[in-house]
Structure formats: C-alpha cells, structure tokens
Length: 195
Image (cartoon, rainbow, N blue to C red; front, side, top):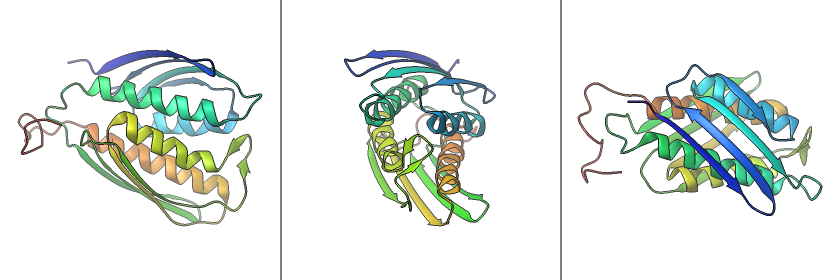
C-alpha cells in the first residue's frame, strides 16, 4: 500500500501545492517565502522520514499568519488522506528532543479528533522572518486538520531558535512513531473499530 497524497489549496491569501509520502526517506523540497519556516519544515521532513514537496505563495506583504496557517492546514489534510483508514499503525507517538540547552516533548494520538495543547513560550517576537506566536498556531492548525491530539511542551530552553527546533523535531519523531506499522496490530488500534 502506497501512503501518498497530494493537495492544492488556493484562497485569496495563499496558493499552496503539497505532495508527500509517509513511507519516504525524509527528502524535501520546501518553499514558503519564509526562510526560518522553510528550515522548520525541512527538519520536520528529515526527522519524520516523510518525503515532502511543498510550495506556497502567500500574502507575506501583510504578515506571515496566512502562510503558516494554510501550510499547516494543507500538510495536515495530506497526512490524514495518506493514512487512509489507519489500519495497522501504532496510532500513538511520543518523543523528547534536545537541541543544545532546550528540551521539548511531543505526544500524538491519531484519534480522528483534532485537539492541541501547547505549552511553550519565546522571549522575542520573531526568529528570523517567522513570528514566534505562529509556532503555536501552526500546531493548532495541524491538529485540527490532521484530526489528531497533539500535545507540545517546551520543558526548558533559552535560545529561541533552539526552542523552535526542538519543538518541530519532537513533533516529527512522535509522528514518525504514530504512523509506523506494528505487525501485532490487526485492523485499527481502537475498540470502536475506526479512527
């Protein structure tokens, strides 16, 4: 079974084209117009082992909000589509990731229900060209469109670049575990019979 999906989304604010392969090798081509956001999405791809081809053109003359939000919407919907009925996958994933002095934890449940709990703060409004408030908004939009519970916590850290990087890497590793197949799981990992 090939777990691949593609999606294009066009609004008056953004045009986003995305294709991904859940069973890839972490290869990526990412262009959002936001250099630091590109960096976060590239390391997400590399560490989740999800091949990601994403191109976004947005109203960056306004600010970064629409681009970050809509990219999260499209990636979330693509992953959800590629997962199909979720038969045989772990469903849950947990990861702790250090980035020098920073440590982040992410816990995921591909439950079919979108909910995000985000406990992290930043000491300045931007890292390069990305508003730090948009890190939380990215994960809230991702949870809603991936239909997953995503709990993110920055346990500690000083450097804002490191804080963001630890968060995105922990998400990547937790998702990698959640979407992985387990040969002992027959059907869907739920007493309800579907996710």
